[in-house]
Length: 383
Image 1 (cartoon, rainbow, N blue to C red):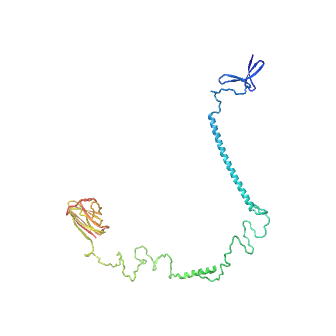
Image 2: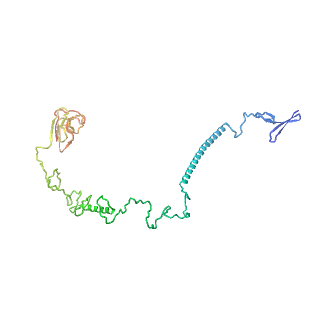
Image 3: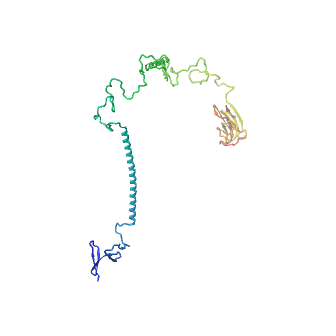
């Protein structure tokens, strides 16, 4: 008969032991999640069947969401590693370039350095041997001390094109303008030219100015500028002896000096000159009339209105008869009913194009009302 017992192994795992016919067989007791247990041999090598359906995961266990995040982190690390690899490749190329440059410098220095002992970089000349005989200069040369006798050049001096004695002697005679000669001879030519120029400029006796002249006095008297009054300092205009009369007429001023005037002077009646007259006895219309077909002046008018209401004389600056109601009048002169309108000007009214007039019953510029025959008598003075 088999005998069973339960015990634990060295790690505390429950072990089911069954003894049959004098032998003992060890088995492992497995508790299922559904509450059932199972017993398997302890030396069983294949996997055990474990049911985890419905089992709660412990805190921090791996889930599908956590795995996705971990994969993303790993991908980011791979990207950074790829970029780092690119930087390393670039650094290797830069290092190769430096090595190539250093090799070229070394080759150039080795080929340019002459045979013997050479120093590159700072040189401490305190430990150098004495310089060989001859003229030697290292770096800046202080020439404050006296130069030794003989011919000495400091810097780059080209004397091949300089004549033996370009200045010449002080006694060298002057040379003609443009001629060859020493500098002394040419300077003598220049000073003589200045003296010759001075003899050509002759100023009158007394104080003379060349250029702008500020005339502050006339015959010793201060100039009377812009005062408008005659005085000792007023400048005069003298008429040439071959022109005793002025070509242009002079305006008569208010001074006490008598001015010669040609022609008639006074208010005596004259047979020529003065205003011309244009007369019209109104017809039964607007009486559009052209008085002068060129520029002129209106010297006045004598008008009479026999009608029982006001009539209007309209003047037009026009070289033809006006279009009444369309043309704009230059002047509009009302003539009262049963009365006259009379005026004469000393100086006429200028009309730049021509002189024309018309008669209407209305005052508006575009009025075309015709007057009745014999209503108005017009006497217009013009020139």
